Image (tube, rainbow over all chains, first blue to last red):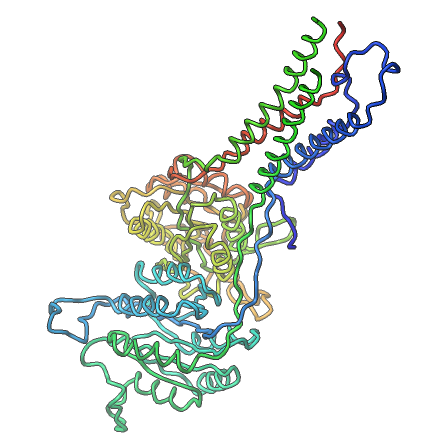
Length: 332
Length: 299
């Protein structure tokens, strides 16, 4: 039986009222001039005791019900399947630029444009909806990482964070290295309770210096974090990772980053945010790879006991009324 | 048989109270929550996280605290005081930009998330060093306008960097937005030095010097002290008047919930209200009256 909390604990100070019916009450005394003449009425006395205790019980139940008894909110540890996924969403000005959707279907109007941020949010919203049982953390980044949500299964709250990233414009500069390190470090003090992944959502590459690269590599390996890069293409002409050339002249920052990620030595996969088929692959691959047992905590909301107490009070009061009627009748 | 009638009458009379209690309890047990209009609130709180907000010139419970810490404490108080059905979101501001972190989320359902994201807000999120308050305020208002029925709370010390020319406000017109809300001024009244660099343990290793900051362009030599910072009540009051917001100079974090939860900033929203306490209290009253010690009536 979990402990009970009261929402209005001060009302419990009224509990001594329950003693009232137990006090000798001369109002209940029947006016007989000389009771020694009456035979001892053991049953009557017992009934009277019962009646007093019932009244006391009713009062106590009412006071307790008014004080708002609740079982405290409980957290139960459960084991499911899923992953801890740290979403790292680019919130720099470049993500605010509008692009024409890269994948044009016949039925789509050619004018369809959307901000890159909009595409990224759409993709992430879709991912959250597909796999709500995973636990997600959300960090926005530009030149600094901004942690929004620590690992949680409150998807509606994560959505509020995603929505926020669509408001106004982001700062200009980006520092992906710092962001990645912050996402990696967020795993540092956590017990290993399931598969871990960083989901990087960005429209560009980054020049990472050697020291940062080393730290990222070390951190990813130490914490056994997989890396998924959801790449938001800036247009039809942005590099296609599947056709990565080794020619140094064609190497863009994105390609550099891609090659570095491939070398880290942890699971790594790149997806295209704009392409629903690629995003479905992303979900499938994350499902397949990140499906170790995951310890998670389920919150059991507190139970309100006041209704139960009120029903008890009603029954006890009904008994009281019944006895009053019986006593009345026995006088005949 | 007048005596007997008397007894019956008295018993009925006294037990009427028990019957009344029983009736109240029956009403109580079968009572459904009533849907009533209750004031709820929807705020987007913007924190100034520029460097001057790191100035530790305030006290929380007798301990020295930075302006940002006090701002966060005030916001936490607001989060805890808002009734269920209200929502709150966070934004941060530095340089010339506001970045929204969380759009308004319902305070009871997402309490844990809101509290932890509030905890993450600190000056480490600062992506630029300037502080254009007017621009930040304008963007906050514009963002709130894009969100549905949202009011703003803008918490700042009012320190502009670089400073505005005398008479300039540095805020684009907000006339077309119908946004209500509060500007909250934090900071001490005595100008103090602004931390420039802080070591890993959080100790200030250098303060901004007079020749390192932009001084007022139209002030006489030596008259402008932009390297020192205090709560700029006059400036913030003017911005508040321009944007048609209220201004609250924060003396203690508890003032924020009080100032924010006012009728003008509330929205009446139908909320189920539990009114069972009324018949339950009546039942309690009836039974207690029945058993109040009384002297037997004389006859």
